[in-house]
Amino acid sequence: MPDGKRIMTTLDTTATVGRLRGVDKWYGSHHVLRDIDLAIGAGEIVSLVGRSGSGKSTILRVLAGLSDDHSGESSVAGSPAVAFQEPRLFPWRSVRDNVAYGLNIEGVRRRAALAAADRTLDEVGLVDKKDAWPGTLSGGQAQRASLARALVAEPRLLLLDEPFGALDALTRLSMHALLLSLWREHGFGILLVTHDVDEAVALADRVIVLEDGAVADEVEVDLPRPRDRSALGFARARARLLDALGVREH
Image (tube, rainbow, N blue to C red; front, side, top):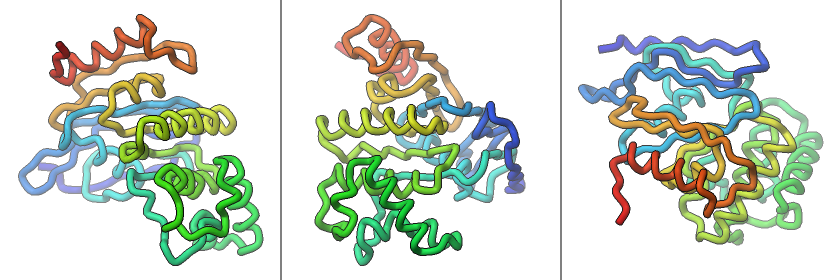
């Protein structure tokens, strides 16, 4: 069993913004991650799919620096940003102050932090809600605010843990379009954890299938964006992933 030693370095290359090498992690006697090797390129979207308990969110937590009891190497370029399925906004702060919060604790002066928050809220189409309380937002608006909070510091790596899982189908498609628009504009790398195979194929350049904490398959999705879900290439990628996940459609 690993001794829990954790190695964290900072990448100095423009080609890779996140990397795991030989990462193992245990929860008691349960081997959660098994010799994980993973690299995320600058401007690349990588998705992790797998059944519940396969280790997807644990990989994200290791890259985010939220896990310090694994063995192996975790390397990131700068400070990664994270957005979760639950927006996790502070209900006692305005939307604007929620987005500026991370900059405030990093020592950015309030005026500069608020100006950056306003710019980012404008990018996600939420500047008109900057003075609103989080409790008054719709689900989609709350996720836009969460995304703005993650992006306000201009990260090179964005980590997304089921960020659209609680949204209705139409709002989810709108959020997909917004994410791709921001990605094109800023060029950050993305690691997306999702249970939705269609979402993974629609967004990612590569989809990695996890099973019992290990990489079971990897599928490259070389299709133009926006992706036509009725296209043969989309169907083939989807079928291979479902097969790797042990899902049979009738």
